[in-house]
Structure formats: structure tokens, C-alpha cells
Length: 179
Length: 197
Figure 1 (tube, chains in turn purple, yellow):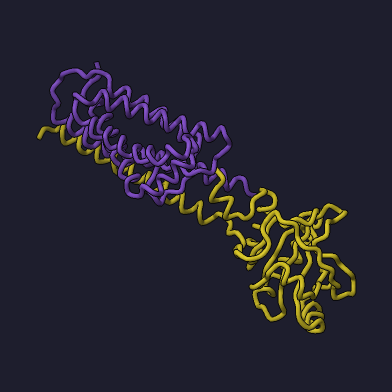
Figure 2 (cartoon, helix red, strand yellow):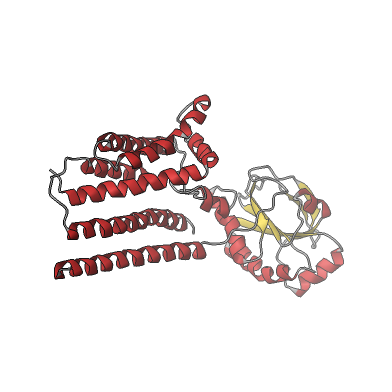
């Protein structure tokens, strides 16, 4: 049984993650459709019908994680989405297409896919799986609530730090490639 | 509120503050990376495309030597064609860079200066700036072939006469960006930074 504090913290973090991912994509669906198409995973005919489904699914996962009844289904859908993203990136990296946009930020984000992003998604899927483990029925104390609130804020900032570190590593590699 | 709750809040506030400081530092490192990245020569939309075979144009340099600019070279060296003008102030500041570049990179590079107009004016210009050792051709068709609209403009051709990089070169950094573009096999450093992961 998982203590409810890490459980709530993990689930709350993924609610923020999926909600922000969906919001970024819905802000410019046309751009996301182009990014999605560049992955070349599905035939052109079916692409238009699928690309808008991605942010809708992400939003559904974010909402579904909020209630204990829908949490297992939303969590499993979220894990599948994360694994699919990792697989799509790994597939394109294997194809040697390192210059396609990852589509992991807002519509202005032009970052290209990288191996570390696929690994990041695998770790995130594993973390979400841990959060879906049954929780003990212990009542939350004041300090628990503080831990969850501050922990969520810290988790968001640490995620942003790690994300930026990945971008910095790419920049550093490019600079190293110059004489 | 118990002492435990207060200390908990204080500790979390410290953790959150430190995390924010790390994020701010990482953003600053990103800005520094962008600032130290070399600036590439400005690519103009018009003109020959990278990877295209350069036109072979016969010209005579100021010393009367006949040259076929753009022809494949038997010595395996690349050719840096630099379009300049005696009336262009930036071109004058670039001349020492071209002279030292020719000396330092002579193993793999030949530098040819190109311009158009009055030969006598160019002869005087070459004498004033000590360009005696550099091949200097005065040929209007050459500028037309490369569609040179602004100066100083440089085009880097490989030993086979294929255009490998081109652009406006206002500094040593811009000039070296052409060499780097050829070495990396990209059209420009801008392309390298934007699309290579």
C-alpha cells in the first residue's frame, strides 16, 4: 500500500502535466497537426482525425485522474500515451529523423526530438504507474497537505529544470561540434 | 500552528526557492550558449543554391594571369571567392582577415578577390592595401553569375567547383562560419543550430 501523500503528489503532478500538455496543443491545433504529421506514424488520410484526439485524450486523462473512480482508467490511458510518445520518438530517431519538432511544448516551441525525451517519457510512465498503486486509508494531516502543496510546486519547477537541462545538453553538443 | 508545521513551511520555502534559483541559472546558461554561438554569414535568398555546381567563368587577374573561376582544381584545394569593392569600408576592414586566412589555411584553401569596374582603380586599391599576393579578378560576369547584390560577399567552392557555402561576410567570424558550414556539410551555421540535434 502506498502512503496517500506520495500518491496524491504523483497524481496531482500528472494532472498538471497532462492539462498543460493538452492546453499547449489546443492553443494551436493546426501547428500540432503539422508536428504530428511530421512523425509519419499514420497514413495521411487518417491523420486529421487522430491529431486532435491527442490533446482531447490528454485533457480527459487530466480530468479523470482527479476522481478515485476514474483514476485507474485515466492513469492507464496516460501511461499508454506516454509510452506511445516515447515509441514514436524512438522510431523516428531510429529512422535518423532527428530534426523533427518534438511537439512537447507550446505552439512556439521548435525543439527537435532527442533520445533523452523518449527515456523521460518511460520514467514518467513508470512514475504514473507507482501513483496508481492502492493507497492506505490514513487521514491527511496539516503537514501532509503542506507537503503535497509545496511538493507539487517543487515537482513542477524540477521538471522544468530537467527539461531545460536536456535542451542545454543539445546546445552544448552543437557548440562542441564546432572547431 | 505547531512548531513542526512552521519548520515544515520554512523548509519547503527554502526547497522551492532553491529550485527556482536553479531554473533561473539554467535559463541564464541557455542565454550564454546562444551568445557564445558563432554568428553565421547572412544568407541571401537569391543566387546559387548550396550543393549546386558553380558556373565556370574565365577572368584575368590584375597581374594578367588567366583564371577559370569555378573550375575543378587539380590541387584538391577549395576556393574562397570574395567579392569586394574599393568604395566599401567593411571590405577594407576584412582585407587583413583575408590575408591572414589565406596564409593560415593555404593547405586546403585558395582565396580569390573579385570585383567589377575600372581596372586601374582596383590596381591602385590592391597596391594601397598590399594585396600583391592575392589573385584579384575584375569581372562583371562573375558578380552577375553569383548574383552579388551586397558587399562583402563570399562564396566557398570545393575542389570540384561545387558551391558549399555563401553569404555576406562582415567579420572573421562570418568568414569562418563558411569554413565550418563546409566542414559540417550544412548550408549555413544557422541551419546547423536550428535543425541538428
